[in-house]
Length: 393
Ligand code: GLA
Image 1 (cartoon, rainbow, N blue to C red):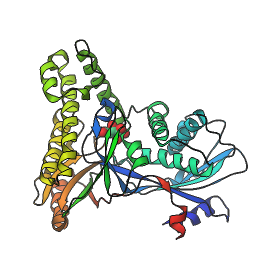
Image 2 (cartoon, helix red, strand yellow):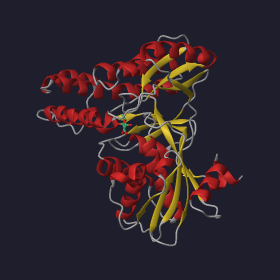
Image 3 (cartoon, rainbow, N blue to C red):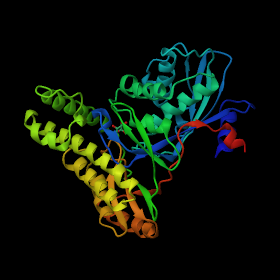
C-alpha cells in the first residue's frame, strides 16, 4: 500500500519527490462507553486499521489536501492564513481544524504543504476515523515542521477540533488512545485526571472480532450532544446536595442513595448508566489482569444491556447483531462500541469458532436487517507515528 500511496501522491501533485509518511490508528473500546465526558474510566485499544498521510512542505503558504477515500472532491485548497471551517471543504475540515488549533496554540508553520490522505478504517463505523485524521495531522505537523507538541496537548487539541470546530461534544477517549496506543495493549484511562495504565491484552485462545453493522452513524451527532446534556442536567440535580464534579465520582451504592435528586426519569437512567459503566470498567481491568476472561465477557455483555436500556444509544441493527453474537458458542461477550446508533460492535470469540461465528451471526442479521454485516479480526496496533523509515525498510 505504501508504495502505492507515494505513487498516488506523485501523480496527484505532479512531482517526483518522495514525501514523508505518517500513520494514526483507529480504535476499539473494550468497555467504558459514553463515560469519557462524565469523568469516568475507559478501556480502549488502537487497531491496525487507520489513516495514512504522505506529505511535503511547499514553498508558498498553500495547503493542498487530497483524499484517496474521496477522490471525487479532488484537491481541496486553502491558505495557511485562512483555516476557518468551510462547509465546501468537506472532509478536509478535520485536518484544517487541527492545523488551525496547532498554530493558535503557539506553534509556527511558515510554509504550506501538499498532503495526501488514505484511510482503511471503514467510514462512519464508529472506529474513530475522524480522531485518527486529527491525530495523524498532528504527528505530521510535528515531524515535518520539527515542532515539539506535548502528546497531551495534541490529544486535547484534537478533542477541541471535534467540540469547537466541528461541533460534536465528544470526550477525550479516541484522541488519547490513538496518540498513546501501544501494540497489544489496551489503555485504562481515567478521563478526569488523564492518569493511564497500559494493560496487556492477552486473550489466549480468543480473538476480538469487530462487527460492522454497515449502518452508518450519520444521525448520531444530535443524539450524542443530547446524551451529554442529559448527563449534565443529572449532575446539576445531584449537585444540589452532593459536592461532586462529575457523575463517575459516585459509586453504584451512592447513586442508589441519591438518585431521587435527579428529577427527570430519563436523565436518571442516563446517569445510572454512567455510574455503573464506570464501576464495570474498573472491574474489567481486574478481570483482565487475573486472566478471568469469562468475567470480562460478562461485564462486556452488561455494558451492552445498559447502553441499550438506560443510555438508549443502540438501535435495531446493533441490538440484533449483539444478541446474535452473545448467543453463539465460543463467545465470551459482545457489545456495541463508540457513539452507537449504528457502527460497530465487538465480540470476544474463541479462535476455533470464528468461522462458524461469522456465518451464523450474519445469517440472523441478514434475516432481520436485510443486508450483511462485515467481520474483521481486530489486531491491536501501535499509536500514531511517522512511518517513513518503516516503509523504506
Ligand atoms: C465517540 C466519542 C468518544 C466517546 C464515545 C462513546 O467515539 O468520540 O469521546 O464519548 O463516542 O464512548
